[in-house]
Image (cartoon, rainbow, N blue to C red; front, side):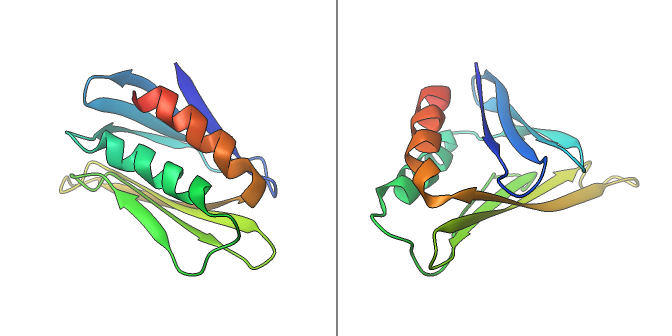
Length: 127
């Protein structure tokens, strides 16, 4: 099972897949490609909760909503413009503390109206 968020501005896609217990994989695909395996421990529901919270807004919100994994290999935050464009800022970190550690940071835009569908798929994935 997997779910993804497609950009409305580019070929980028954020994919959540391969959930096994407390682990899942996150892929960025498009003009930049990377993936990490995320250890969510007991907080995968927190990530699902982020998407549920975003979907609960009846109109564009102010400020930033975010979630980060316990070990810091995956961080996602969301902001929304007054016109309803939602921008996800995504950071993937690999091999933290190793000599060849790496970091990928990308933005991915979607529409406010897509949030309920994203939340539905996130809830199914993390349940």
